[in-house]
Length: 245
Image (cartoon, rainbow, N blue to C red; front, side, top):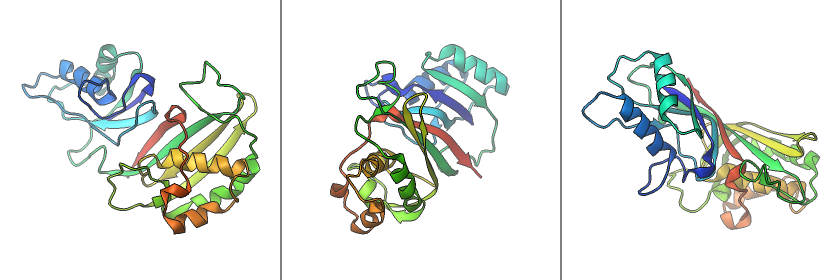
Protein backbone atom coordinates (compact mmCIF):
# COMPACT_ATOMS: atom_id res chain seq x y z
CA UNK A 1 0.00 0.00 0.00
CA UNK A 2 1.52 3.27 -1.16
CA UNK A 3 0.17 6.77 -0.47
CA UNK A 4 1.18 9.47 -2.93
CA UNK A 5 0.53 13.05 -3.96
CA UNK A 6 0.56 14.49 -7.45
CA UNK A 7 0.01 17.67 -9.40
CA UNK A 8 -2.55 16.69 -12.02
CA UNK A 9 -1.91 19.65 -14.33
CA UNK A 10 0.20 17.80 -16.89
CA UNK A 11 -1.51 14.42 -16.57
CA UNK A 12 -4.36 13.12 -18.73
CA UNK A 13 -5.89 11.67 -15.57
CA UNK A 14 -4.93 8.75 -13.36
CA UNK A 15 -5.85 5.74 -15.50
CA UNK A 16 -3.55 4.52 -18.28
CA UNK A 17 -4.54 5.60 -21.78
CA UNK A 18 -2.82 4.96 -25.13
CA UNK A 19 -0.32 7.66 -26.08
CA UNK A 20 -1.17 9.74 -23.00
CA UNK A 21 0.86 10.72 -19.95
CA UNK A 22 -1.10 9.41 -16.97
CA UNK A 23 -0.32 8.93 -13.29
CA UNK A 24 -0.75 5.17 -13.56
CA UNK A 25 1.61 4.81 -16.53
CA UNK A 26 4.30 6.93 -14.86
CA UNK A 27 3.99 4.90 -11.65
CA UNK A 28 4.11 1.56 -13.46
CA UNK A 29 7.24 2.62 -15.31
CA UNK A 30 8.94 3.43 -12.00
CA UNK A 31 7.72 0.31 -10.19
CA UNK A 32 8.88 -1.99 -12.99
CA UNK A 33 12.34 -0.41 -12.98
CA UNK A 34 12.52 -1.34 -9.30
CA UNK A 35 11.11 -4.84 -9.75
CA UNK A 36 13.18 -7.92 -10.55
CA UNK A 37 10.12 -9.95 -11.59
CA UNK A 38 10.02 -11.38 -15.11
CA UNK A 39 6.39 -10.36 -15.56
CA UNK A 40 5.03 -6.81 -15.72
CA UNK A 41 3.94 -5.37 -12.36
CA UNK A 42 0.55 -3.64 -12.52
CA UNK A 43 -0.55 -1.03 -10.03
CA UNK A 44 -4.11 -0.58 -8.75
CA UNK A 45 -5.44 2.78 -7.56
CA UNK A 46 -8.20 3.63 -5.10
CA UNK A 47 -10.00 5.30 -7.99
CA UNK A 48 -9.57 7.45 -11.06
CA UNK A 49 -8.96 11.17 -11.12
CA UNK A 50 -9.63 13.17 -14.28
CA UNK A 51 -7.19 15.27 -16.26
CA UNK A 52 -6.11 18.29 -14.22
CA UNK A 53 -7.34 16.89 -10.88
CA UNK A 54 -4.77 16.73 -8.08
CA UNK A 55 -4.19 14.34 -5.19
CA UNK A 56 -2.90 14.93 -1.69
CA UNK A 57 -3.44 11.34 -0.57
CA UNK A 58 -4.10 8.93 -3.43
CA UNK A 59 -3.57 5.25 -2.55
CA UNK A 60 -2.28 2.46 -4.79
CA UNK A 61 -1.16 -1.12 -4.29
CA UNK A 62 1.01 -3.53 -6.24
CA UNK A 63 2.66 -6.92 -5.71
CA UNK A 64 6.44 -6.68 -5.53
CA UNK A 65 8.60 -9.78 -5.27
CA UNK A 66 11.68 -7.88 -4.16
CA UNK A 67 12.34 -7.86 -0.43
CA UNK A 68 12.71 -4.09 -0.27
CA UNK A 69 12.02 -2.35 3.06
CA UNK A 70 9.21 0.19 3.17
CA UNK A 71 11.60 3.14 3.43
CA UNK A 72 13.51 1.80 0.46
CA UNK A 73 10.35 1.72 -1.63
CA UNK A 74 9.63 5.37 -0.76
CA UNK A 75 13.18 6.48 -1.53
CA UNK A 76 13.55 4.31 -4.60
CA UNK A 77 10.31 5.33 -6.28
CA UNK A 78 10.84 9.02 -5.55
CA UNK A 79 14.24 8.81 -7.23
CA UNK A 80 12.59 7.36 -10.36
CA UNK A 81 9.44 9.49 -10.56
CA UNK A 82 9.01 12.94 -12.16
CA UNK A 83 8.77 15.98 -9.92
CA UNK A 84 4.98 16.24 -10.17
CA UNK A 85 4.54 12.96 -8.25
CA UNK A 86 5.72 12.21 -4.71
CA UNK A 87 5.52 8.96 -2.76
CA UNK A 88 4.55 9.81 0.82
CA UNK A 89 4.42 6.43 2.57
CA UNK A 90 4.72 2.72 1.82
CA UNK A 91 3.33 -0.09 3.94
CA UNK A 92 3.17 -3.85 3.57
CA UNK A 93 -0.41 -5.10 3.74
CA UNK A 94 -2.26 -8.40 3.66
CA UNK A 95 -2.94 -10.06 0.30
CA UNK A 96 -6.66 -9.39 0.88
CA UNK A 97 -6.08 -5.63 0.66
CA UNK A 98 -7.15 -3.89 -2.54
CA UNK A 99 -6.65 -0.16 -3.02
CA UNK A 100 -10.02 0.20 -4.75
CA UNK A 101 -12.30 -2.54 -3.47
CA UNK A 102 -11.57 -2.28 0.26
CA UNK A 103 -12.05 1.50 0.55
CA UNK A 104 -14.36 2.73 3.30
CA UNK A 105 -14.63 6.31 2.07
CA UNK A 106 -12.93 9.25 0.40
CA UNK A 107 -12.45 12.90 1.21
CA UNK A 108 -12.23 15.52 -1.52
CA UNK A 109 -11.23 19.17 -1.26
CA UNK A 110 -12.21 21.88 -3.72
CA UNK A 111 -10.59 25.34 -3.84
CA UNK A 112 -12.40 28.30 -5.41
CA UNK A 113 -10.61 31.58 -6.09
CA UNK A 114 -12.93 34.57 -5.77
CA UNK A 115 -10.87 37.06 -7.75
CA UNK A 116 -12.54 39.06 -10.48
CA UNK A 117 -9.84 37.89 -12.89
CA UNK A 118 -7.96 34.58 -13.05
CA UNK A 119 -4.86 34.66 -10.86
CA UNK A 120 -1.98 33.39 -13.07
CA UNK A 121 -0.41 31.64 -10.09
CA UNK A 122 -3.63 29.82 -9.19
CA UNK A 123 -5.04 28.95 -12.58
CA UNK A 124 -3.93 25.31 -12.40
CA UNK A 125 -4.81 24.82 -8.72
CA UNK A 126 -8.19 26.47 -8.10
CA UNK A 127 -11.52 26.95 -9.76
CA UNK A 128 -12.51 30.60 -10.22
CA UNK A 129 -15.80 32.34 -9.43
CA UNK A 130 -15.98 36.06 -10.21
CA UNK A 131 -19.59 36.66 -9.18
CA UNK A 132 -20.93 37.89 -5.81
CA UNK A 133 -21.08 35.07 -3.29
CA UNK A 134 -22.88 34.76 0.04
CA UNK A 135 -21.07 31.98 1.87
CA UNK A 136 -23.72 31.96 4.61
CA UNK A 137 -26.25 30.71 2.05
CA UNK A 138 -23.91 27.86 1.08
CA UNK A 139 -23.47 26.94 4.75
CA UNK A 140 -27.25 26.83 5.12
CA UNK A 141 -27.49 24.46 2.13
CA UNK A 142 -24.77 22.01 3.22
CA UNK A 143 -26.91 20.02 5.72
CA UNK A 144 -29.04 18.99 2.71
CA UNK A 145 -25.93 17.47 1.11
CA UNK A 146 -25.17 15.24 4.09
CA UNK A 147 -26.86 11.85 4.24
CA UNK A 148 -27.80 9.08 1.81
CA UNK A 149 -29.31 10.39 -1.42
CA UNK A 150 -29.84 9.58 -5.08
CA UNK A 151 -27.30 11.83 -6.81
CA UNK A 152 -28.55 11.21 -10.37
CA UNK A 153 -28.79 14.97 -10.95
CA UNK A 154 -25.10 15.29 -10.04
CA UNK A 155 -23.46 12.68 -12.28
CA UNK A 156 -21.94 13.47 -15.67
CA UNK A 157 -22.64 11.45 -18.79
CA UNK A 158 -20.17 8.60 -19.22
CA UNK A 159 -20.64 7.26 -15.72
CA UNK A 160 -20.64 3.46 -15.52
CA UNK A 161 -22.05 3.29 -11.98
CA UNK A 162 -24.96 0.89 -11.58
CA UNK A 163 -26.41 2.92 -8.71
CA UNK A 164 -26.39 6.67 -8.11
CA UNK A 165 -27.11 6.36 -4.40
CA UNK A 166 -24.23 7.59 -2.25
CA UNK A 167 -23.77 8.66 1.36
CA UNK A 168 -22.08 11.93 2.31
CA UNK A 169 -20.83 11.85 5.92
CA UNK A 170 -19.59 15.42 6.12
CA UNK A 171 -19.62 18.57 3.96
CA UNK A 172 -18.02 21.89 4.90
CA UNK A 173 -17.14 25.25 3.38
CA UNK A 174 -14.68 27.83 4.70
CA UNK A 175 -13.87 31.30 3.45
CA UNK A 176 -10.22 32.33 3.67
CA UNK A 177 -9.97 36.11 3.51
CA UNK A 178 -6.16 35.96 3.34
CA UNK A 179 -6.01 33.89 0.17
CA UNK A 180 -9.29 35.11 -1.28
CA UNK A 181 -10.55 31.56 -1.56
CA UNK A 182 -13.56 29.49 -0.56
CA UNK A 183 -12.64 25.88 0.27
CA UNK A 184 -15.09 22.98 0.22
CA UNK A 185 -14.57 19.51 1.70
CA UNK A 186 -16.72 16.44 1.14
CA UNK A 187 -16.33 13.09 2.90
CA UNK A 188 -18.41 10.19 1.65
CA UNK A 189 -18.50 6.47 1.03
CA UNK A 190 -17.93 7.07 -2.68
CA UNK A 191 -18.48 9.62 -5.42
CA UNK A 192 -19.90 9.45 -8.93
CA UNK A 193 -18.25 10.73 -12.09
CA UNK A 194 -17.79 14.51 -11.68
CA UNK A 195 -20.14 14.50 -8.67
CA UNK A 196 -18.02 16.77 -6.48
CA UNK A 197 -17.45 19.30 -9.26
CA UNK A 198 -21.18 19.42 -10.09
CA UNK A 199 -22.11 19.81 -6.41
CA UNK A 200 -19.62 22.66 -6.03
CA UNK A 201 -21.01 24.44 -9.10
CA UNK A 202 -24.55 24.05 -7.74
CA UNK A 203 -23.55 25.34 -4.29
CA UNK A 204 -21.88 28.37 -5.87
CA UNK A 205 -25.13 29.13 -7.69
CA UNK A 206 -26.92 28.95 -4.33
CA UNK A 207 -24.36 31.35 -2.89
CA UNK A 208 -24.99 33.67 -5.84
CA UNK A 209 -28.78 33.47 -5.21
CA UNK A 210 -29.42 31.87 -8.59
CA UNK A 211 -30.98 28.92 -6.75
CA UNK A 212 -32.99 28.63 -3.53
CA UNK A 213 -31.04 27.48 -0.48
CA UNK A 214 -32.68 24.05 -0.30
CA UNK A 215 -32.62 23.29 -4.02
CA UNK A 216 -30.62 20.09 -3.40
CA UNK A 217 -33.79 18.50 -1.98
CA UNK A 218 -35.63 19.16 -5.24
CA UNK A 219 -32.70 17.94 -7.33
CA UNK A 220 -32.63 14.61 -5.49
CA UNK A 221 -36.26 14.11 -6.46
CA UNK A 222 -36.12 15.11 -10.13
CA UNK A 223 -33.03 12.95 -10.87
CA UNK A 224 -32.23 15.07 -13.91
CA UNK A 225 -28.72 16.21 -14.85
CA UNK A 226 -30.22 18.95 -17.03
CA UNK A 227 -31.38 20.66 -13.84
CA UNK A 228 -27.78 21.42 -12.80
CA UNK A 229 -25.65 21.61 -15.91
CA UNK A 230 -22.67 23.53 -14.53
CA UNK A 231 -19.48 21.68 -13.59
CA UNK A 232 -16.66 23.35 -11.65
CA UNK A 233 -13.21 23.15 -13.33
CA UNK A 234 -10.97 20.16 -12.65
CA UNK A 235 -8.12 22.43 -11.53
CA UNK A 236 -9.70 23.11 -8.12
CA UNK A 237 -10.29 19.48 -7.15
CA UNK A 238 -8.02 17.45 -4.85
CA UNK A 239 -8.36 13.87 -3.64
CA UNK A 240 -7.38 14.57 -0.03
CA UNK A 241 -7.64 11.21 1.70
CA UNK A 242 -8.76 7.62 1.16
CA UNK A 243 -10.14 5.72 4.15
CA UNK A 244 -9.87 1.99 4.87
CA UNK A 245 -11.42 -0.06 7.66
